Length: 124
Image 1 (spheres, rainbow, N blue to C red):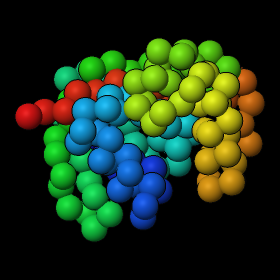
Image 2 (cartoon, rainbow, N blue to C red):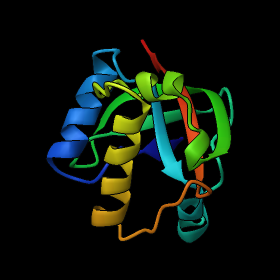
Image 3 (cartoon, one colour):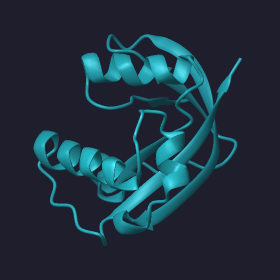
């Protein structure tokens, strides 16, 4: 079983994992380029992942529901809401993700940047 590590280690990962465990977060977005850099394959529907905490501990299992690669500028409001992080509109989602990907990861983001949008369910 592959591992799912949300956000960056520390408080952000704790927050995102808490949202998954509470059932509020049912989606996550990753830049497509990161898959190639890390030698990872895209997720596929039905695949299960171990949701990992900051210490590498397994917190839960999630099952992939859907996977779609879309340009950053075409990510939908419905997807942004499924991320469960309290975005008020799609522009709020875009600003937050640009900030994270540019400031934390040093990426240049345009409307054409490929984003992998994954929906998942928490296995109980």
